[in-house]
Image (cartoon, rainbow, N blue to C red; front, side, top):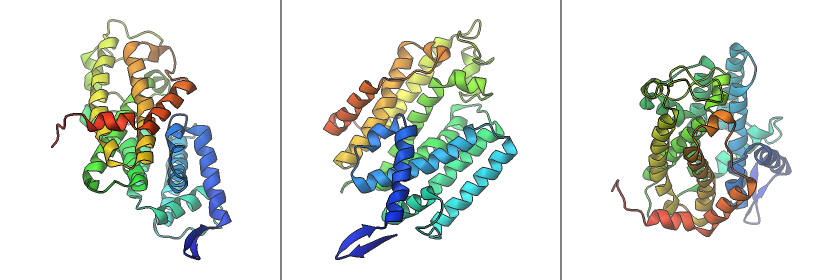
Length: 314
């Protein structure tokens, strides 16, 4: 798919078209991640868009209106596509542009493609309607659907000299958990309407919220604010650990991560300031604020601030 001509790597028109398709999907669908991905140089931006487009396909199957058996069938088909990518069996003229782009990205970067298998595993947990008794249980799910994406992204970013790739992968995984827990808090009402509960059952019981969230007011007699504050503290701790990834990345990769994580961190703080807002509708940030967070990431402010934090894991 990529060939060398006069000492320079050349990419075929078909592969470039596949990447353009993935970048279009990312621009249209990645309302938060796109701000960070745009900060990357071309090759990394293309690879991240391929990862996003494949992940979006998996998520859309899980979130769609198909019956469970059909969802399982389509997830199996998607896993078979991933197997073809892993085996190098996707040709540049394949009819699936996402597979073409992902296959090329996997040749260019050391992507731990097993992470996409984990994503499919996590969405299958959704299809089965699994619930989670404790945070440790929920963390397994979060690692599948978000931590794995963090580790895959690190395959694109790489680490700068002198930093331990294994430790960087741990931080990327933890940052994924922080983002996913923020998502769960934001979407409690929407998920309840779809028959899904993600917050740990023990936490819900502790704060009198076991009956769920089906109206724009908290369950009668519950301490909903206490529940949100409890989960926000957990998410903040995950962010604090995950942000230690930033100084381990080159400037533009760090800017991408800082932008994506920064948008979710601000979203978390907005939820913390008005917990019941998540029951009234989807909490979001205006585009101008997301752009500000992206520019802050590009300036390196978040990476420099993180580098000054005292290490608790040395």
